[in-house]
Image (cartoon, rainbow, N blue to C red):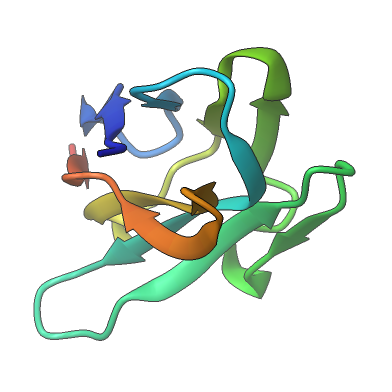
Length: 119
């Protein structure tokens, strides 16, 4: 069984920064795309940023220029550096990865980490 373990959420003032981390619980995995989603109360989960194994990135318009996704393939870890945070960024952030396990590709999710932007 593969798990994604997240860390780095918390409370921050508007304009502040946070860095989220997500690591797969096993090594030597085949992982294609890794990404971060978020869900605020009363809203649908949305893709915030994603990164392929080749390093291509994609961001939702509302975070472009403020958030940076990066990945260390050797240890199956993905990061989300969040700068210039706004109250609208408040949500539970979920790590996602497409992983091949026993020959089959599947989508795996972390448990979620709360990010609260408030003064």
